[in-house]
Length: 230
Length: 223
Image 1 (cartoon, rainbow over the protein chains, first blue to last red):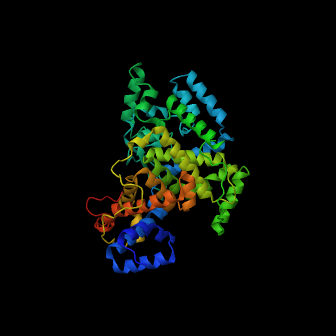
Image 2: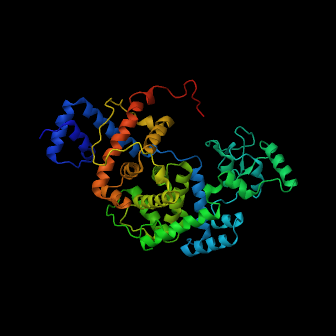
């Protein structure tokens, strides 16, 4: 059997899978010896499979592990699995109290607050780059001397919006100027944007804060459950 | 509950000590020791994230979908059958979660339309340059990982998801076909095309530019 380049390209993936007949394998191997181009294609394709198959090829976003642990801890602490019925009731409650951020938070319990002082952080620009440590409850400007990290740990960078979502409170030493600004808003009632508006503007809670988003997500789940007969 | 396969029938069974430890962890979590679930999923975080990222192509959405899938796996851990591989079951839940979110976003209309070749397996490689030999440490370098992620993200959805399940998640051809609800033949055709397209996209980098600059050279900060 003799194969040309086009045929080799068509079979190259199955060849790497070991999923070609012995005759085809022999013909392709003969071709690779002759054809430099096809040999390069084979090497490159094999490298692609090898590189992407390596666990190191994909990097987790900074703080992924920490956020996952927090969500799991919350789930474990809740003691029982969420059922579809609970979600439906939560959505109904959301509909009754349209626009209420408190309700959205209750049905979307992903942000445990590490510190009771987390709220005043709203004066800090959401896109500001900040750093946190695993043990700490505060977020800081990079380089702040009040950020304490363990010797084998490096500070974790994120945006202020992310830090607030994760329940960190601002460090009053390095972020003081923003907090004073925020306090001025507090005293001039009516001029401070509502928290819901702030979160929406700053992409709060991955967009699931608004009632509509939660509702449509649950509707999808119900639909998928029906499809699976679950 | 949405997104969780009702039954799972893969028959490959792990045998080494690490996997046995995993089996023990699964039994404990199923028996109610839910605090051990983190230990169980920790080794698969990257894989789960990669599966979600391949479908959603957005870091924040992928993280949220990956974590939601892990929470669902915990909630439905009793549905897991011992004859299946835990990593495959977890990935399957993630794929379902991510696909559900993508449908919600209607992001199919945003797919790149440049790639319009028919799906018949006839793909002509564009680049015949030899790759330099790749040292395994190449993956420790951010620019290499970024190059891989960027190339993968530029593929059309149908190629990307098949490639990720087969070559990143190490699903079998059958498992990939089942997870995506397509035929075995489609999996093989799309896989071929995905691999060849990725090779074309990455060949210039691995032919030189990924290795042309030493780390911490001028302009590249070590922090």
